[in-house]
Image 1 (cartoon, rainbow, N blue to C red):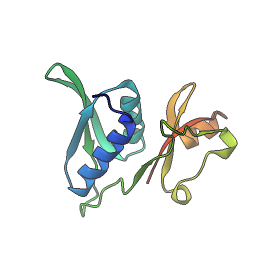
Image 2 (cartoon, one colour):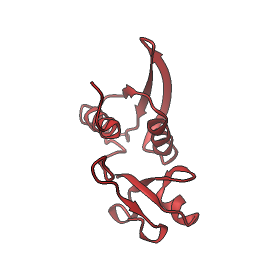
Image 3 (cartoon, rainbow, N blue to C red):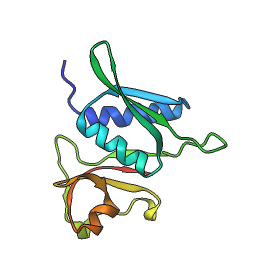
Length: 132
């Protein structure tokens, strides 16, 4: 059976792994998921990303990042644009997350990027998620 919202599944897997204090989490791979993971790694929310093949299917393995006292770097992740209701914004209306402590991840014509990068390039797009 086909999955309705693969990105929501990705975010749920990350949240569940963080709640259980797992070192890594894996999920079915796609180009969009890999780009979101790249942004999360660039911003310091996860340690690294591996793309492997298990059972003939591509899998993304994300290595989660924790502080010294086992406090996760990702305390929350929320899907904004959903299959039933897409959310698009201009560069001037990109929301700040947690007063600048979190990031907004957008899908733009030039690829997946953070809200800060999108504002700097004066480019809007689809708001994929908020991470804090």
